[in-house]
Length: 476
Image 1 (cartoon, one colour):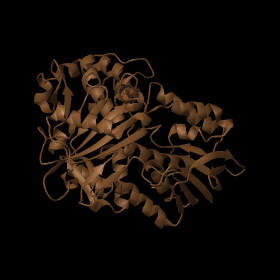
Image 2 (tube, helix red, strand yellow):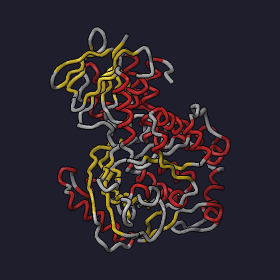
Image 3 (tube, helix red, strand yellow):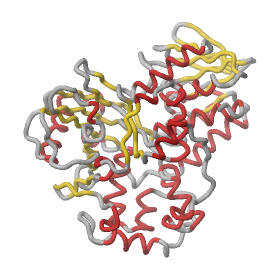
Image 4 (tube, one colour):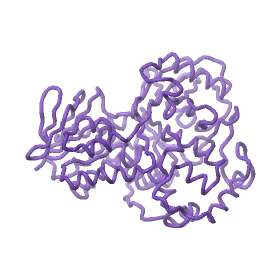
């Protein structure tokens, strides 16, 4: 009946293709990926000695409807036996650190952590939380994450904890990021209940409902905080691509750079370097700026708004050390911008996922993340940032923060250019406006991927599902 072209073979494009295959309405799906591999930022190095290193997301949270949706997909792909779960009781879940004033501080947790003063904070968190219920809600449509948290919980929490969190999740500046788009749960809690605390206790707004499959039920029963896969996160997109291939309805093309898309009588003409193909509908999972560069002139207002969505560059440095070298056990530590603008945080990979260590001999795997919104300020333009300089900065951070004087026995430096979109204030209006333009002009085009509705793996997968269901109706 119809041919759908999916632009971009990252997890968003793969997810959209996966859901398209579940509908009998679609005859053919054409998946076009510009690079030499599918999976986008889900990228693992599997060494011949059995060690696994993640260059992108290293774990996925099972929480909420979007978490259950992803686990249902994992079930369907037959990856259930590959899951490496980390429970909430695990030391990696219980212990998370901040590096402030030149030393590591364990994030407050449990009742004792809330009722007493725990450095680096100057007063008990309970005082901030108790006072929050009395704060009036804003009349503004949106505000920065820093402004929102300062107003409701105090400037200290915003400057230290929330600043660090936004650097860890978005590699971004909480003084520019939108609370409505980056933390919709917090925004909705204030809007519906007048308080974050009351919103968390009583619920705020309509929650998405996804029927839990066996794996999602297991994650609830066993209280998973996050999960990975035995052969690394890259196994996930590989399994989707294999399923698409086996379906017989999907043409998968790597190294297929889209040059231009033009409206046609039946939908679109998609121009590639080596030819043209026709599609009744396009689902774009391309980065916003990449899509803006291939749209026709008739889409100028949409093109401009796509170009307004910024993204940041992150350097990811994987390190392996001989022996057990960590002074503390936990998931890792984040660094507020007031402490070190260039260094976002260090993940202690061997703690949550020791299964990814090489099987013979004791080793410790770490990942240092740098740059983000501060990349050019700290390292200059990405083209000029050498691997040697980035590695030196990463190992110096490990020495300084963790007291590790030994040199790493193995390392790999990856520069992810424009990898995390930044949802600045007013992002929700921009996205509404873009989708409004598409609807008002009857364009056979859907927008999905990390530039619009959430940057997490779960959000991007669910965005692919939503795009397909808006096009074809329920497909699962």
